[in-house]
Amino acid sequence: MGRASLLEMSRHTTFRFCLDPNDEQQHLLTRHAGAARFAFNQCLRIVKDALSARLTNPSVDVPWTGFDLINAFNSWKKTPDAGRVFVVGEHDLPCVMATGLPWRTEVCQQVFEEAAVDCGRALVACQILAKVDERAVGSDFRASRRRALADRRSDYATSRSRDAVPRSVLVTTIVRGL
Image 1 (cartoon, one colour):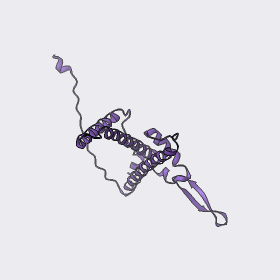
Image 2: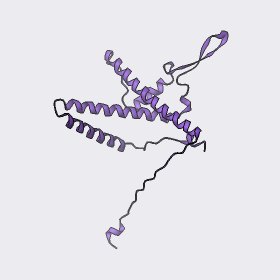
Image 3: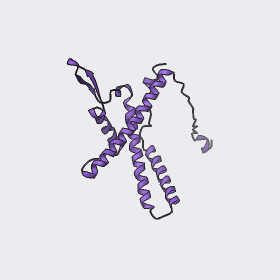
Image 4: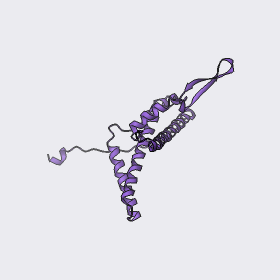
């Protein structure tokens, strides 16, 4: 037998799926998507507030990585800054029943974490583009934009290849209604 016949062959196949959720599943998908958008925007606000505070106090730490943003969001979501639920207590006086995001238990924790990681990656990509634009001052604008896009694509590709575990969303609570 020849050497070529002993080599192993592999075949890659692509599958396409289409979701057809019922009303309850559609509501859960919408809730999770909204929570992800909320968490991304909140992480961005946390970074902007930290950058503003750093102007007056250089010792302020700015959460920049996905891990730092996850920790910052997790500590924020249980504080009164995230919200409070009031109930009428004795003598018709309002009292605080709960603090933090009251709906945080209605969505998977992974939604918040993925949004924080995505925000961290967007911040790093923005920082890379700013550095490329600084180097390109005084040169051809189109050429600098092409270089910036090429750098961003290569950085994104290498950051995705460094992920030890593929990114995924746990959908056990969504599929439960079937």
